[in-house]
Length: 463
Image (cartoon, rainbow, N blue to C red; front, top):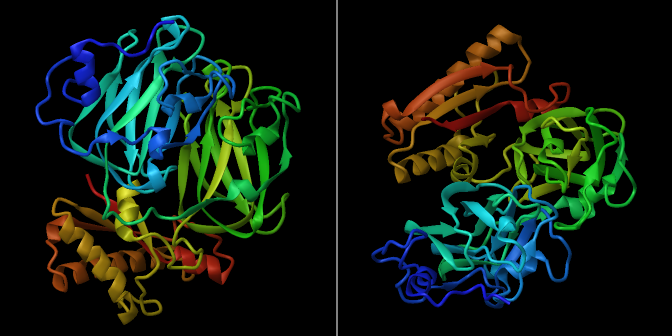
């Protein structure tokens, strides 16, 4: 059997991070003391999620991090798909290199050729940013992507986007060369509500085994996916645990058949009353044809008893197909008006932050004293990030009519900007204001709770 490791000097140096994938010497890369393979299962690395594995024995996804040259991974098809890895204890790492060996015992047309690299410092389902690409030669050797500077990551996502034209996507080993940061804060907690949810209803399923709707709530990597009986729009309703608060919903649209069948346009609705009524839309996703946890972060933590997933369209195939639905509650997102992640983390994750902690006098743009903590947090973020520019958005409920609320929202946004400039010394040129009045609600205006959530300030990264 061919070994996946080469003894050539260039490839040994690639493992150490001293050469890039093209063989060029990279000064000052991973020669630093203490750099190890953080992805290795033996070092505490783990696979958080993956779209598919051909089986759970000789082609299991776990082989990607088992350190063995005699094992490999194969997906259920040649379609693009992603893997999300965590390091020991979900710790924060400083990465220097990502290494992929594409070798498997099958034809090299199946071996992965193109890899996209993403990192997140927060959660394994959101906050990812694209940091590089690795083009692989069809050789059984370790091939490295070296970061220009050490890069922090709590989660590493590798998207295998193309192989050599074969019928399966395959690879041998993944390495993440770096070091854990001992003094880093612990990972933010989150809960996958899907593990305690149940399938309530669905429009159709192709069969009740490997294409059953229940597979949408199955564990990551289970061979089953879901397929409808045709490509028409259809829905799945999921019953959540009682009094659940949702912050994020994700869909992995991978299926083992043609990517044209994979879901493309997906809408999410929630209800707190019944599985058949009371649903309100909370957002949409447009999914590219790559098996991945495509995540919608809700504008605010949202109470829900039922989640409706509306699969509106696919990529042109004859069936509507997907692999998984995930439902999350992130740390600190308690569901009450004002609850949520820090403003800094929201801006880092999505480029947008929502706060209900800036309070105004009734029917006025006068900022109340209890707003000071939130305003100081915004000012601190702007001081720490000297190149950050923000759009300050004002939003209201529907009490008082459209024209009045539009003016009120503009004045409230202006008041926030004035505080940041006059009280915190932030440069005026870094801040833009806009008021949207009642035009962008995130909750039902028919209840006081909903109106409270709609009265908010949002901050948007500019440029």
